[in-house]
Image 1: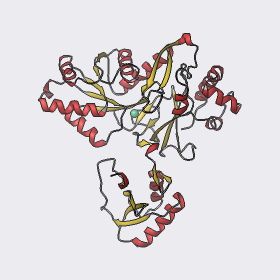
Image 2: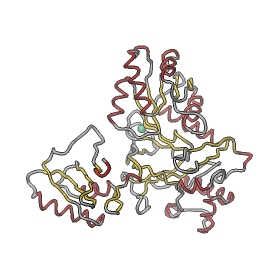
Image 3: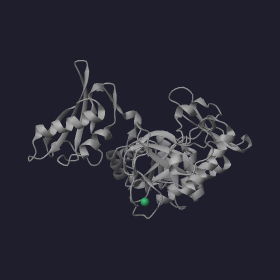
Image 4: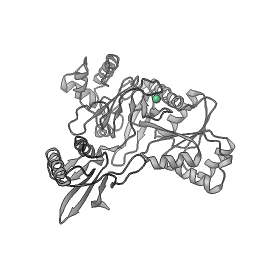
Length: 411
Ligand code: ZN
């Protein structure tokens, strides 16, 4: 899904503001001599922005609107060094609430619901984003913030909360406490809106079954408003993202070129209307893909698949960066092998080794197939793996997300 004409017009508005503010991105544009873009190709030639650019702008270097229009700042927790400070105008705060309310609506939440909010408040964007969306929708916010499980469970019963907003790990902890205390019949929860962490299908099923609720994944990051820029609908076929506020690209983190819809890569986000700190082509380092086609719900908002990891998950083998999807792509070109495969990396006699296990049936010469795959892999990543062909059905399966890469070097 390439950038549309109306999105390009919005990007040009942001380019103008960034040039006027002369901040890090304004300077990048000036250096490149860019004052506007008119085609998708020109847009795709715009420079990227990185977290390190944002960190270098500390404290208020990202401010793009005049200071008298800035009404709030938020900050992302910097695990290393300086945090990132994101300034918001009144319109940014409102836009975020509109997007968040839309998320709740996509989850079938209404103004009759009572929403228990357990993410943190303060500099962090999470809690206040959930609250603003809830109030905009007209539902009742129960602004708990994190921790104090005793009190959470008491309020959940007394207030008859119908929606739980939390991280997946906290939802799991609460569900276990509810089971342990035998108070399930006093809990009125119907839905969970879960954000900010990657979680397995197994964990998802466990929480949903234990609490007897529907779960929705919410996407977002502090640099781009915060949580609430996308959520899955009841068909659970990926997270619809609000393309009237954002343009999402998926790029190959190695070549930095956009990949076609359906292909995995890094999520890159451009804010289309943000005033306080607009970002153009911001590299999130989150891995996912755009789900092609239309959702059965009829919504035209594009869908992002579950976040599959971070570009930082790229494996470094023999000094070479290897991306699991590279191997998968090669294997897909072999019709004789099944969809299952396993990559094992280990360290033997001072050297990294990679073994690739694939499955096929008895009509194929195993050794010859292994050789052909090894040649293809070598030409793609630069070294020869040990390929082992096994009978169909011998590799492990799990419900949805099977662990396909096992790095034994750090076990
Ligand atoms: Zn949908």
